Amino acid sequence: MKPIYHGYKVLAALFMAGFMVYGGGLYCFVLLVPPLTEEFHWSRAATGGLVTAFWLSAPLILLGGAAIKRFGATRLLIAGILIEALCVALLSTVSAFGEMYALRAAMGVGKVMFAVTLPYTVSRWFSRHYSLGLGTVWAGWHIGGMVLVPLTGLIIAHSGWRTACLGIAAGLLTIGLLPMLVIKGPRSPREFGLGLDGDPLTPDAPGAAEAAAAAVPAGSLRDLLGSATFWMIALTTLFFYLTYGGLLTHQPSVVEGAGFSPLLSSIVLGSTAGFAALGGLCSGWLLDRFSIRVVGIAMNVLLLAGALSLLWVARDHSAAALISYAVCFGITIGGGDLYFVALLRDRFPTVSLAYSYSAWYFCEILTLLLAGPAAGRVFDLTGNYDRTLALLAGSALLALILSLVLLRARSAPVLGAAKAR
Image (cartoon, rainbow, N blue to C red; front, side, top):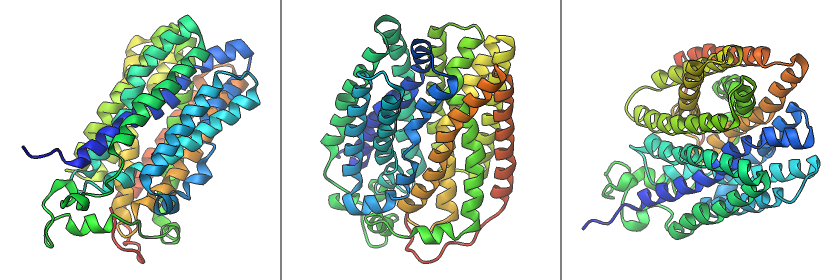
């Protein structure tokens, strides 16, 4: 019987790691905002800042390409999981805002070390099925949220948020870390005598040259940052993820403020994660077969629809609006990053993904860092979420307009680096 292609084992391990790192480290942490606000009487801006402190390590992302080249992707992945597990366990032992903020920021360091390697790692094993492979890996993040959020909600309700933190830490060390240790070793399909996607490795076989090129990151940040197209993508990213981060951070508070129960709030967050997993898989499949333009426009329209739906929830206590929000925003969560990665690969084919993704991911994380506190500040000033959500919807509309312009333009390939996926 033909052995299973090792690339599929890599995808499975990355799926389970993301299940805990993102599902436990971000989705579940959002549920802590209401109990922390109630227990310590902190403002919404402060508790929103705790959520987005996860992304305080944004500047380190720029070193991602160099770190992969220096230490290897797998080592960074494992170290990132260990750091996040330690920090979330320590969260259960502190009460001061400063200590909690510092630990949350340190969790972000672990998350960055883990996340920045994923597109590059998948590119070492897949070419024709790259977007679907990356979508599968990222689906683990959201399925983690779908499964873990309701469980975490029950733990918080019965045993408190500190017990929930310890449970997440235990999951990181078992469900998240062990699969990565099992697949640790082979670095590319060439070690099995195969090309990308498990194809036969012959001098003229599709994927042979790519498999050799993917072994070592190429390109440089200088080539990327000198391009006007990259800065256009960065500006689009700013408006897109300002809405994304604001909605994700304040979703439980909006839902509970509209009169829905905390348990229902956790179920909605979990279903949002489920639709994100579906959105990631479907977007990956579509990107491998159809134009980036179709997927890109769809992601921006769905983000705008999600923001408007949550505004509807805040104003009218509408169950239909809650369902619309979970579907639209969930699919956007799953497919948004895939769209931007596909755009980077298309516009900058001569720059290694280890470098282009690191630079773009910096823009994304910096925006997410600011989005939660900014939205919380608007709420603190106005006393309700109507204006906050209206501003977030306006930001989504600007992202859509910029994407339409960007998807019509086509830049010349960046020179100076060997082609890398």
